[in-house]
Image (cartoon, rainbow, N blue to C red):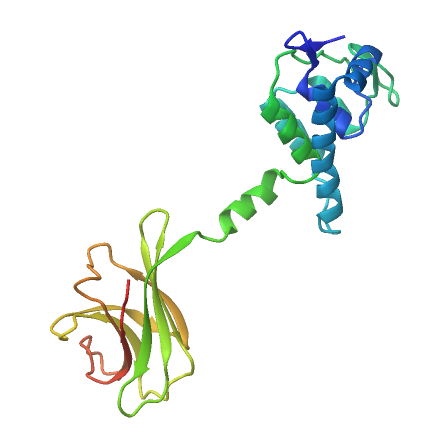
Amino acid sequence: MVLSDDLHVDDDTLALLALGEHAASGDELAHVAGCTRCTGEVDALRGVADLARESGPSTLVAPPPAVWQRVAAELDLGERAHAAARGDVRVAERGEPAAAGPDLATVTPLASRRRPRSAWLAVAAATGLVVGGAGATAWWQNRPAVTTVLASAVLEPLPGWAETGTAQVRTAADGSRTLVVDLDGAPAADGLLEVWLLKPDVSGLVSLGMLDGTSGEFAVPAGVDLAEFPVVDVSDEPLDGEPAHSGVSVVRGALDA
């Protein structure tokens, strides 16, 4: 019988029990049955596993064995956890491997120190809450960016135009800023639509780029002070090769923090 803290069954065994594995000796099972703390731990972990199985998409595909092996190695779960996850070894008593197919596996007893986080991670990994390999990498690379709205503006039409819209300055965790422009319709412009930040008296301006369609996102240069350039302007720019503002604005609005 292996108990952690000289009192309770170790967390790795509790996690495997919660997953329905035959991973404990008779003495350990008897201890869990009579111990409120260990029983509660198994019940909580089993709840996590059941929730993942019930709410997970029906199209989930089990990862290859190498994924779990890397997780188990990282968490130092021991060979028994590897074997239980593969399903090729059943352990009746700690340290006594049973045959599974033509081969026998050598089972190394798990460490007796408590590792609460490893138990929860083991359950999460086995039930699909933690994924590895290319799937995890793809999710991380394509995860939604966390941004905060720093300022916003209502874009009103200038004389001769009917379109309206909105603009938001969003800041990311790294401090970078993005101006998001959305128009409610496509203006019948003669040339290209260009997005600007202006001073209130129009004595200075910064071009952010061309608006393709009715929506676009534009990086705000780090050196631009929005208190100095708080006006968002979308202009109709003729294809004349002239980088200056045409003087024909479609919509305009001041940013409010």
